[in-house]
Structure formats: C-alpha cells, structure tokens
Amino acid sequence: MKSIRSRLLALLLIGVSVVLVAGGIALQTVTRHSLEIEYRNAMLGHARALGASVVLDHGKIEFEPGDAEGEGLPGVFRIERETGQLIASAGRFEWEESQPLVPSASESSWGEVELSGDIDGMAVILAVLPRSESEGDGTGEAVLRQDQDLILVTVARSLGPLQQSIARVNAAIGVTGVLVIATVAALLWWGVR
Figure 1 (spheres, rainbow, N blue to C red):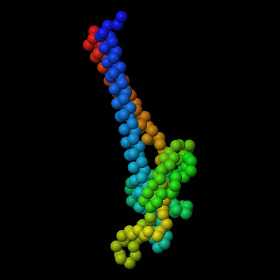
Figure 2 (cartoon, helix red, strand yellow; figure 1 turned 180 degrees about the vertical axis):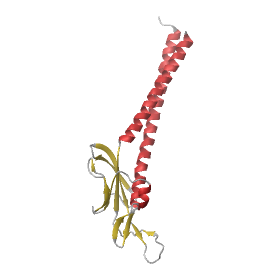
Figure 3 (cartoon, rainbow, N blue to C red; figure 1 turned 90 degrees about the vertical axis):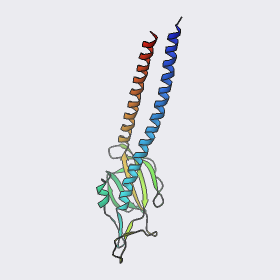
Figure 4 (cartoon, rainbow, N blue to C red; figure 1 turned 180 degrees about the horizontal axis):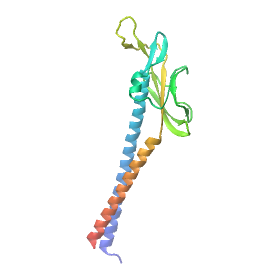
C-alpha cells in the first residue's frame, strides 16, 4: 500500500506537468503567430519599398531602386506590369499551386513558392500604381494617376529562417518545461522524505 505522501507527490507532479504543458503549448502558439506576422510584415515592407521605386517617366515605366537599395533589396523579387511585361527581377521562383489572384491597388496576395534549389518559400504580390514625376511645376513631387496600369511587385523568401526560429523557440520552451518539472519533482521528493 502506498503512503499518502507518495500519492500526494504523484498528484502534484501530474498537476504541475499538466499546467506547464498547457502553458508551453499556449506560449508556443502565441510566439509562432508573432514570428509569422513579423516575417510577413518584413516581406511586405520590402515589396512596398520596391513598389515605391517604380516610376512612370515620360510614358515609360522605369525601376529606380535608389531608396530600396538602402534597405537592402530582397534576394528574390519580380516587378512586372499587370499585363505580364517584366520590368525588373532577381532570382527565380515558381508558384507551388496556382498564382494567387492579382490584388487591387495597394492590396496584397500571399502564396507558397518553390525557390531555386528546391527550397520552400512564401511570396507576396503587392499591386501598386507607379509614381509619375510631375512636369511643369518644378517640384519633382510624385503624383499618382488612377488611369495607369497596375504594377505587380512580388517578393519571395525562403521559409527556412522562420522555421529555424520557431524550432529554437520550441526547443527553449521544451527544455525550460523539463527543467521546471524536474526541479519541482526534486523539491517535492526532498520535502516528503
């Protein structure tokens, strides 16, 4: 027959373990979601910077990466007219399934891609109107015209860094949980003896 102390120890360990596992799962879920949001926001920021570098100059679309280069051009991107005419690109990628629907101006669409070297990735398509340098007023201020063709800016990135970050967080949560449970078990064991 087991002693009351042994039962109490077992129940406390089970209770603490359940609470820690539930807390670890909740923490992992929140952290994963936050990392994914930051990853997407970074990609969208690069797409916006590239979109701001597309200029309509005397009826000709030009890519002037001046400001975008300062932020570091993404490794894989494509800038094209809505008609499919390529303006600028770097790197290669293929859509995993079908290409996401083309978004309206200032909106974005997301999809899964395969990058060179058979690497899984994610891509964002951002639809922008090219800047048009105003003529005659001397200010050089950018003016948007609503009758222009949309420019599609696509930025693609590997999912590897995101997956590595999530794996590190999971490992840290797991190790911390095991250490806490072992510490609680040792303290309870020592306390009931």
